[in-house]
Image (cartoon, rainbow, N blue to C red; front, side):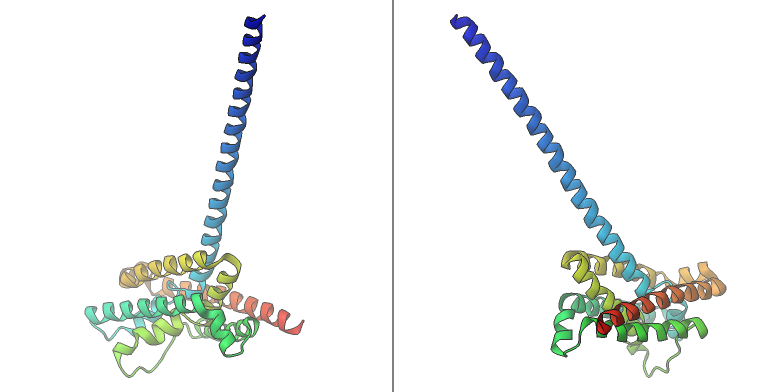
Length: 234
């Protein structure tokens, strides 16, 4: 009798252990799936935020402008100028990504008003690029080109600032900072090899890319204006 009870108890214990192991395996699988889904969501958010920011920063569309602004410089001066432009743009965008909302509050400006203003200025830039095909400025010194106008407002203008603030609100600070860093790594690479890229595209190809990107910028600008106006008028 005791042998039967022992056998029954052993069988029950074995069955219980098997069920526990199955549930444990299922829990591990569910946890792994949740982690994978979370990682995929973060990756998707990062890709979306980076693409939106890259399109607005538009380093490829600005290649002919970069060439025209630095055509009187030698190779060393050009590299120094582009390095200054990359650092200026990165620091400016990081500052607005981290404290953009607080800066707007300090001046008593709502995000939606900033969106409308940024959209209008961005639209002006886009129309200028579409019609003129370039950005012509009278510059006093070549050393200033890296900071203004390449760093600001060509790379980091109102559109890029607004996009960073919106990314911060929709995706969080980590995604926003990563999108800024990834975008400016690409910007640095493009500026470093701006001459080969220009030769590869050719004069006609560069103009086509400039106007195509300007069209995308115009569409983004209109979207900013409509979104900002919608909330202001409510």
